[in-house]
Image 1: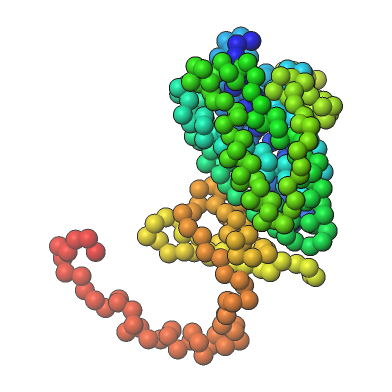
Image 2: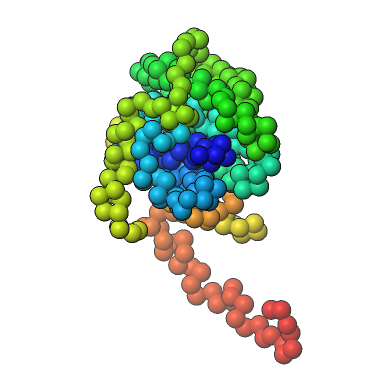
Length: 249
Length: 94
C-alpha cells in the first residue's frame, strides 16, 4: 500500500474508531442535552471518516469504497492511533480521551489545510471547523470536572494519568510521515507536540489537575499494532455487513 | 428534582435582520454550557446565526387569570387597526 493511502487511512481510522466509541454512549448519558451533544460529535466524526476513507479508496484504486474499508478490514489493517481505542470508561475518561484527541486533531488538521494535495486540504478545512467546536466542548468539560467536586476531580485526574501514555504516539513520525512531509502532502507530527503540550498543560492547570509525568509512551496504532480493545470494537461495528454482505442501507 | 441544573429559555435568530425567536428550553449549569447545549439541540439543521439564553427564572409572564384586564380592552378598539386607510391606486411596494 502506498504511503499516500496509508497516510489518509490514519486520519480516517482515528475518526472512525472514536465515532464508533461515542455512538455507543447514545441514550446512556446522564442528561438529554449531553446525549445529543455526544451524538453530534460522533456523527461529525463519522462524516470526517467517510471523507478520509472514501478518498483512501480512490487513491488505492482497488475498488474499495468507504464501507468496504470500514467494515471489511481486520484490526491489524486499521491505522488509528491507540488513544481512540481506549474504552469509554466513565464520563471523565470519555472527556479526557476526547480532549487529548480533539486538541491533537485540531492542530493536525490545521497543518493539513496547507497540504499540496487539494483533497486533503479540503477535507481538513471542513473537519477543522467541526473539531474546533469539539475541542471547545471537551476543554470546557475537562475544566468543569477537574475543578468540580472532589469526586469529579479524582476521576478526571485518574483518566488523565491513565490516558497520558497514549498521547506520545500522536507526535511520533515514521517513514510514511517523513515521505508525506517531504512531498508537501503531510507534515512532521513532531511539529504539533509543543503547541499541544502548551495548551494541554494550561487546560490541566486551569482544571486544577496535575500534568502526568513523563512515562513510557505507547505506540504502534498507526502501523497496525493495536490493543485488544480494537478487536471488540470492530467485532460490534462490523458484524452486520460481515454476516450479511449483501445488506444495503 | 434535586441536583437538577437550572432551566434556560433559548432564543434563536434564524438569519441576520430577523428577531430572536423562542424555540424551547433546556438544562445547563451556567450560561456558557447553556449556549453550547442550545447550539447542539436547536441549531443542528442550520436553523440559526445567533443564540440567546435566559434563565427561565428571569422570565416574568402574565397571569392567565388576568387575561381579561390585560388583553380584553384592545378587542373593540378598531381604530387601532389600519383597516380604514385607503390605499391609492398605483402605489407600489406596499
